[in-house]
Length: 252
Image (cartoon, rainbow, N blue to C red):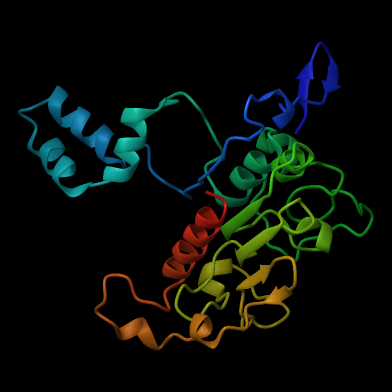
């Protein structure tokens, strides 16, 4: 949320609605995908195959990778093909939320229990408490803010959570990963044994009237794990999709 210029920190200026002729702020949708390979998108695979039409491996790769929605966004927008990020979850997310390089905000993908009691500001996993995030700046400009999905930018105190970082609404999980069926943070997902012996249900939400764990029994159920449905109702990605679409429809 700060840029460095001429050796000084300067707060970036966000346009307000007052300058618009109709008084309306444009809607902003920001999507982050974890650990996505450079060529794991259809438009790159197709371009690679077209550049070497006699290469059977490139042809097979192009036939296997289908990302029509992403391809359409690229075709109708701007592709930043020299835009670099961290190669792993939490540093990437902390950088995106704050507008800082990972080395200046969170360089290591540490577990959520890591803390330094001698440093109450930046001694916890995630974004240091004294840094602002994009949602806080957007709220100052008059936006309503919401986030759905994986947070992984800190949870040691309320200030570290999406609620403390300026999001009016949040529906998702806090840690590096969790089980998308039963929503628990198993050791295979987190890489460490937590205080709850990895039996914590990591699916939470906050809004104008509630802040805490998701209480909907249907969302916490994993009985659809044996379903052959292409979009099983209890799978976490389905829950995220439905929640995100609902938020977008309310603000359309």
